[in-house]
Image (tube, rainbow, N blue to C red):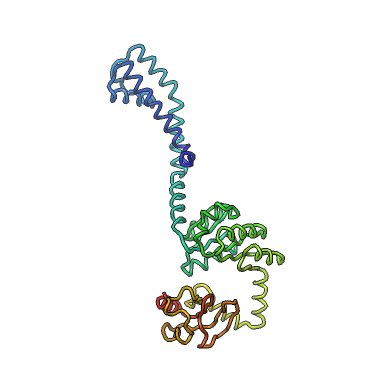
Length: 335
């Protein structure tokens, strides 16, 4: 049914055109005893009003039928041809197959990131993820951002309202690993967080907030992290005044496009023979060149420069700093 609605502007005029041709063919065969080819030819030159010579002289009944066929088909034929031409010229065929391809690619996505909203924060998020080779889907309701995203980035763009469950499901939320909602209205972000947490309880959810009072509400709704861009920007500028070199170094380490990566290593992602090992036994520095700079306990506490005796146990994480080459070597060792 959806398929018919999608092509209704094409199917209906095509069906009318087919009906006219069949009527003409049957009429000429019945009245003038023409062969099928002769009847088809007569029907086409009559309906198209091209004025070629008749196959055989027509009887009076045949002339009346031909006149009626011309009268009834002239406007209908023009409408059918115009509708079909417009349908193809307007690009609806192309749009249909583009949508089908998008749907197929979305169905195959796993462990990806969903970005809701393509404003300033959404653009920056997608830029960073793209530069780090991450798979992500952008959900945007407005036309202009969708068009610019489609032209500029090779990633998937889904046009729709992210507050609707069906759009989130279409974006593959049940197979996603994270969702970032960057809408300017806190109430919309709150609604998305509630829906996302319901649809995928294991999802890592990051939400933007404009109002300070929205922070707690978003976390109660299910957000793992709430970012307030204005506060982050203000704190960053204050830090540049007090500790400019330290902040610049951190920006350099965590920046986009530099050959330095911060990577987290979770207990669950380690091979069985490396689980429950100490940092000394993992020997990350000698095996890859990268450095372990932090540790997160199962209780959520952070330890800077953990000791070599620190053991990586379930629900714990290590934070590793290194170049892209060193991090890739580490991934190969731990995969």
